[in-house]
Length: 241
Image (cartoon, one colour):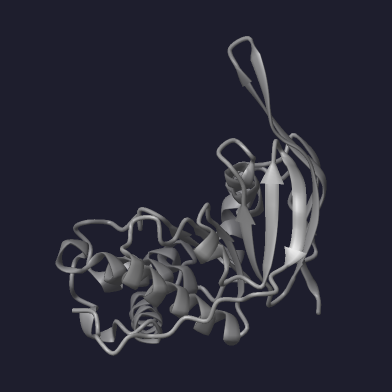
C-alpha cells in the first residue's frame, strides 16, 4: 500500500501568556492509503492538535508532515487552504452546516471554492447525497432533518470533492446510540469503497470500528496497534424518518 500520511517528529508549542504549552511533543506516524484509523486519548493528550495538523488547519512548530508525497509542514495559509480543499474531507461533531442553505447547497459548498460551475456542482452534490442515502432530502434545510440526517449531509459534503482522506472529529458525539451505529455503518461502507478514514473519538465502542487505534498521551504516541476486535455495524430494520 502507498503511504498517504507521514509525520516525522512533529511537535506543536503554544504560547499562552507567560506559559508555554507543548500540545504535541514528538509524533512520528505513517498511514497508508485505504487505512481506517482512530486517534484516542484523554483530554489534553494532543489528539485534536494532531488532527488539526493532519487536516492542514494548523502547522507544526517543528518536524515534517508529508501529505500525499508533498511536504506541507511550512506552507503559507493560502496554500494550506488549497490543499485542504483538494485533499481532505472534514466531518465534525457539530455538523457545521449553513442553517439557511439546503442540503444540496451545503454539500456543494467545497465545489464553489474549487471553481466548479453551478450545473456540475449540483450534479456532484446530488450524487454525494445519494451515496449517503439522502437524495430525497436534497432541498431540505438542516432544521428539517434529524441529527443523523444532518451528519449524513456533512459526510456527503466531505465526499463531494473526492478527497484523499476523510477526517472525522467525534462524528457521533451529538447522536443517540442507534443513529451513531447507523453513521458508523456508513463509514464502514466508505472504507470498503477504498476511502482513507481518520477519526478522533474518546469513545471506545466507536473506536472499535477502526482497523487501527493510535492512543496519545501527553503529546506522545502511547500505543499504535491494529484493532484485533473490529466492530461490525448491523443495520436495524427500522429506518430513520
